[in-house]
Image 1: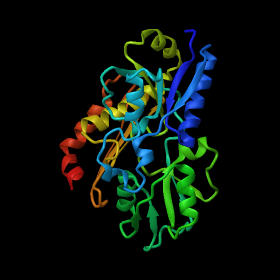
Image 2: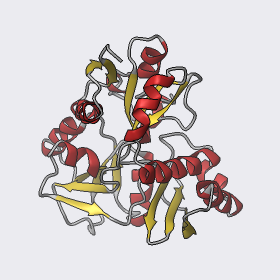
Image 3: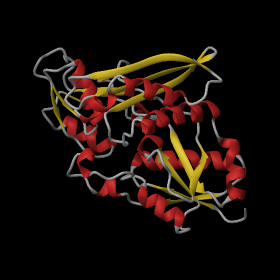
Length: 296
């Protein structure tokens, strides 16, 4: 390929970091590339909570459009933001090795055992899981990219805000006043990056396939399968995390009522060669009333 590979990316600091990281991977296999920043609907609409916007792929659809129009050759996404069904004509090119998958709370006040604690998050999943654990706490909305949310926290009377550890770490902005929430089940594919391309671009897909991290791809796709079977969108209060352990895959999934009052959790280890474990986990929660919890 003589022409540089055009890399479509959102314009936020985190998105550009991820795109530049992908760019170094392309360089490692001898491919020249250039970045093409594209603003997403999600970046433009900052006034409402994400779950009120009611749009699937709010951070990805403009990149999909650019890909289908031939304006870019690949698109780089935070995988947790990508709808479980890719648009027709678009496919996975590769999934690099996953970063940190955990959520963290960045605090102005570390005493979250207090009954009057105020937590800021725009994520239904984070809010629901927090309310399940701390029912007396107040949840308030916060929007913006990583630096914006940290700035809002420092200027506010919020006690803390919940964020993805991966984004903070990648931007080297993980504050000292942050605590990893090991008990919180992350969004499906949190910490993973998805690179997409046109299905018809077989030459490019063949070249990029060698960059795929098989373990990350397997685990992230099982988490997304769990989400798809539960028929939850990217903003639903559904958590999932798969991890290779010894000779198996440890899969943990959850669905939490929006007010935090009810929660179903799946936690089991599967054989490495077992297929569709995300589907199996989701079906077991559906049998226990997951739909009622999701609709509650």
